[in-house]
Image 1 (spheres, rainbow, N blue to C red):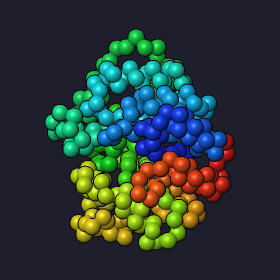
Image 2 (cartoon, one colour):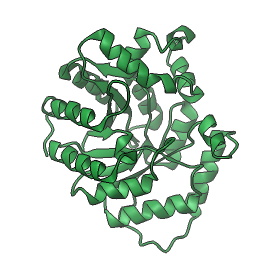
Image 3 (cartoon, rainbow, N blue to C red):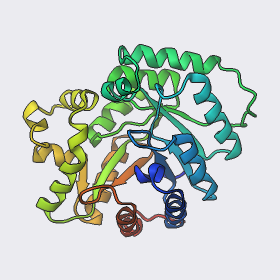
Image 4 (tube, rainbow, N blue to C red):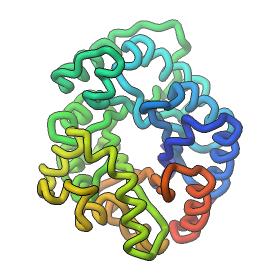
Length: 296
């Protein structure tokens, strides 16, 4: 993993390949250290997406945030990580997760006992034998972890955790469970919009889908939010906790809060009005780069 600041954006993985290549090169030139590609409904295959970004850049690392364990067996996951880890030494990060019940069931699987499923999957990965050349330093393995048991598994069976849809308060709790020597890489949604009404409207459009998923809502309840905070697109308190909005300085303050809470790296997800827009995201990230003191 390179740098303390990266970029998480859905269109890095599912947009047109040429647009993804150009965006990756631009982000590298701005000084962002790591790019993250996801695997959600409508996404491209994350290993292929990661390879496109890695081939288009020279320095940045690329991580899967996350590759779904229900989308490929452990042998395929291990082989994909080994291949990219060997081809782009030190520049690939394997993030894996159990996803969400509704998405897993859409694939024809039964979503039950996610901790046990992940533990068995990791066992199978560790037992995989592949003829893919082994890199000198294997790719770090991060787990999409929110609550204590998955965070403990991230500590005991992985290089660390890649939490999503979390405030700095979660980062502090995660660090306490992970200990000092595991990577902690939270995602942070941001929008450069100083008007509270406009910023929260953009934030709620982003949050709408996630507030229907129990993995996220249960975690928020654990963090002290209430059912009323989760209703009607989210209270202002919840919106402001999940999405950093305002000026460049306001966003940097939120990133610093994650660092102060124990994050090693923060993956920024720039939000756009109505729907994800890579050009709009790049404009925001270019504006943020000087405030973050990034160096190409």
